[in-house]
Image (cartoon, rainbow, N blue to C red; front, side, top):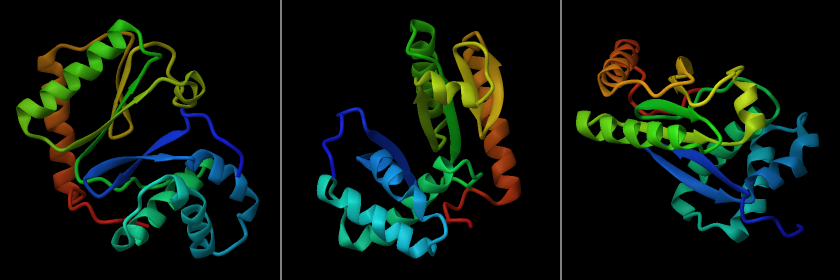
Length: 180
């Protein structure tokens, strides 16, 4: 495997935690041609490729393989269910002051409300474009665009987050279990 840049760190969800994995994007590129192989073989190959550069406890390898397989499927353009014990929050923006302020405000509101949530700040313009959003910052809660081009008030954020967690609770989706 060739040397990878330090930026090749992918955040993956493992239960209620997000973990950074070095080299996952490169590993996915290497096994993209394996689409016809059984999923277990793909997951095992991804684990073997990233394990030398990441600490992955033996007791958690199956959970990591499921997460790697989810990332592989996303790279192929497939829709996949994220493993999450709370809300999925995405801030889209290249890192402008407004984008950073939105991220800080979201984190503060989650803490104030005591809500679990995976907060991801997507800065790569290609990834942002994939969401079809034409403005920054943008906020997505559970993959629903809530605002584009402005930082919402704390009051609005609280309303949206409470509404989103209520919808998840009504559907029974906050148990953190992996869904196929």
